[in-house]
Length: 629
Image 1 (cartoon, rainbow, N blue to C red):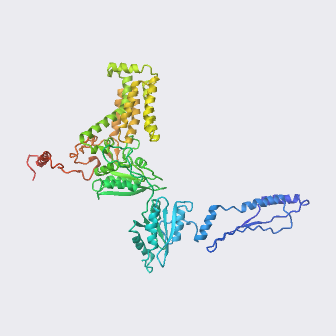
Image 2 (cartoon, rainbow, N blue to C red; image 1 turned 60 degrees about the vertical axis):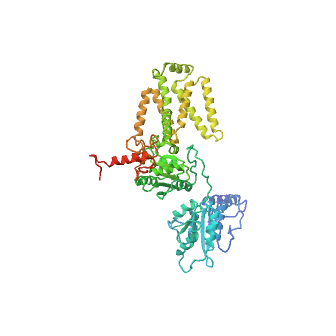
């Protein structure tokens, strides 16, 4: 394209004035036209880049003044723009491929027949060649009459060994193609050549093709075929199955979920081997899609529950969803409440047991935690180890956790209420001991408790963030040094150190991380209530808390069920029942199959058999004492 550059009228006026002033002194040349031509010839046969710049001066009979020289140089610099390296690379691609760099216009929804057009769409869709990890490999299919094809994959997500051995090599040596038939019918033959080594799925839209490329698969484009083949070649590096970090147990499996999406679902299937186990795939994200899997037991889980979860997930509009913790906040009922509405776990055995009970499991991308819903409050106080222990031991541990929950929630506020408002409720010797320990303390009890609780939170957070090798040491040594120094300085009473330490130990017994956060936050609320009104404030706070808890729901299920509302359910709620007596699934989940055990599970025991026969006989009698026919 030729571009002519002339002087502006303002420059011409300045130049003409300068000429009139110097007409008698210096000969000059009048610049009528400055023209710059930049010719870029693109040819498939020639790889030479030619750029000719012509500056013609039609009248050379006069000499240029200094003003004219300055004006011409400035105009020349504006006309001849320096060419960047990216533009040179663009022109080189155009010369070698014989096509434009990117697709012009809106990207179509369907795959195109022309391979060159599909390549231009790929260039525009994935920002090539700037995007360095998107690889496009050209190859030919068929022996004597080859036709072109390309393989597209992401370097780092796809296994190159699988691509070379199981995709490119079989297709390059494929010779049983009938060239008399249309190319649209060749897709089945190509798919059959790839099936023995990989899973190949055909797609016809750009959305499906791009999602499979970004998921680690290799997508094949063919010249003359308006469809693509997506071949499973995922092979990125990930952490192997390791030990559970937040839900450690003494008895039971020790494996935990990893950052591999398919490995996590596979761990659940390995433990729950049933054809009823269904895994439905969804995707979230407008900027970057994230895989979401919904697992449930068909015929056991209530389908209304599955439908509700899918409706909530599909209604989420977000650019990027990195972890299951964010999805939990999007799906929960009543986001203002402190109590969790989903059970977050990293243990496959707990997910498998929840699925068998009628719950729904949700896996998000590369998150190491799965979500179980709906959840009950009593479930948050349970661990997977409870089911592996005999019922007296499991019940004892659950009672310990319930007492620990009460201590972690109310002990500091109880200490404040007794010290400030109700000293007559404790023995005289204990009251005198408390008064003597606080004789040199300059702060009120409330400020004293808040300072110690804040110090415990600092130590807890520091122990988590500091490297694992010295983290526990910092927690123990820091607590000892701070406590001893505070008591020696007379800032904190010794009895308060005991109260805060017991409270911290009780909070550490919470098996659920989200529940422990709820208890820690609510503890400060009860501290304020106890400091303001004593036991009356604590009682009022408990009443408000219980009223709130009976209204909290998890996907429509009250979390305090089966106690509030009261209904007959499995004995595995607050306490651990006998394993052979837990015949029913929790009614709060509304399962399709309520019974999970036979009426007689210990048939070898004559006492159990006789008692079961007696129960069946009693159930068989009518209201008048006669057996129903």
